[in-house]
Length: 88
Image (cartoon, rainbow, N blue to C red; front, top):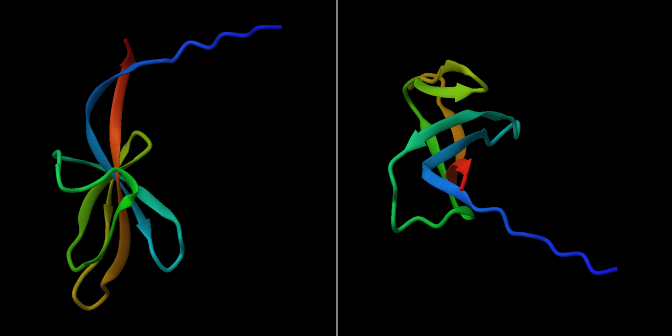
């Protein structure tokens, strides 16, 4: 039995970051970001940062605000990813 698999090609439309809470491991959501040529995608593009102000992110189809302040900072890990659109 000879099976052939075609490779699917998708249109590349931008970049996004997945925002994860470091202490709980929960995914808080995603946000669109501009292209950063110096930052690799995936695991090697992870950055850890401390939020000192609220930020707007997407969770599913909703826009939510992640609450953070100088009194209650939030440590998050972001992963840089490709945003793909429709199949070409």
